Image (cartoon, rainbow, N blue to C red; front, side):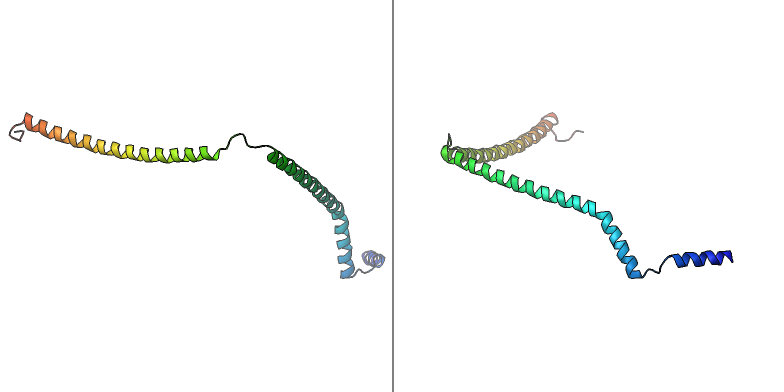
Length: 133
């Protein structure tokens, strides 16, 4: 009987909570738990945006200064003709390199042919009949 009385007293102490009230209470608790983190992230995003605006302004100012410097000074040397000459020289060197490579290939083939012919003649001189036996 004592067990039934404690069960009755505990059930009478707590009012019945509806599922909607339970869900709302849980949502409010989660919201209060996350509120400081969300506020901190929000503040940091605001600071980043401000710093980006400052950086953008500084970049624009630097761009203006560089444009003024570029307009006020003439380049010391015009490099385009030299670049063209360099490109022409590079092309000529590539053509000459190709010619030299082809000549080297021909010389290698000629050297191989001479070596074969020399070996054949030497074998004919050493063995006049053409056979070793």
